[in-house]
Length: 118
Length: 112
Image 1: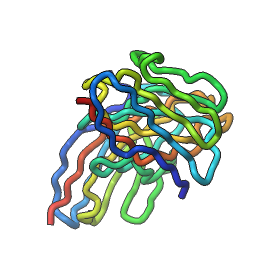
Image 2: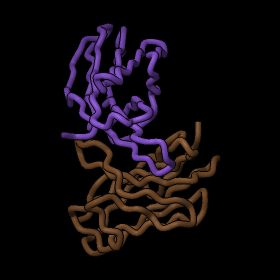
Image 3: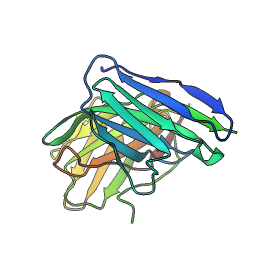
Image 4: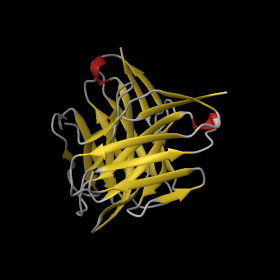
């Protein structure tokens, strides 16, 4: 199966700091990158969708200035949580995906980044 | 109403039992359907796609009822390793920007 790496896997930071999460598709090119977050005992919630070289599209309620997404290449996307606060503590999962005219073809997931903001 | 709804469980069943989950979706234009499993503190992993004619993969059987807008997953002869959260996933449209919606998951616990 496809290999997706996400770094870091764990991060603990103080309130007010910024955290950058990297997601790499190691053996395929991801035309689309989805970023999700998951709070305990809840489902994955889509935060934003980005296509390589384009600005990300954010879901309602997700602040684009707080969650900066860069999808500079077909194998790398980053999510930066700026000025993180305790309520941003969550499990962040990237999902690099190949797409066609029929929509997302195969959705892969990174192993996730667990963020704890103190 | 949620776009994708699942019974959160938990389902606690003995090893060897048969267990079934249902999932309903609200958008009748939804195009493709999947079951994922997610282990605690891990990312979701694709278990199987769900086809209109129903499909089987070993002990797992998935079915789709478009008229009633629900999807089901049946697990036969359950194993301890089947303990996980099962997520129903729906792709809502045709375009490359179509949304993929995750259900909140059904927790399954298999006891010896």
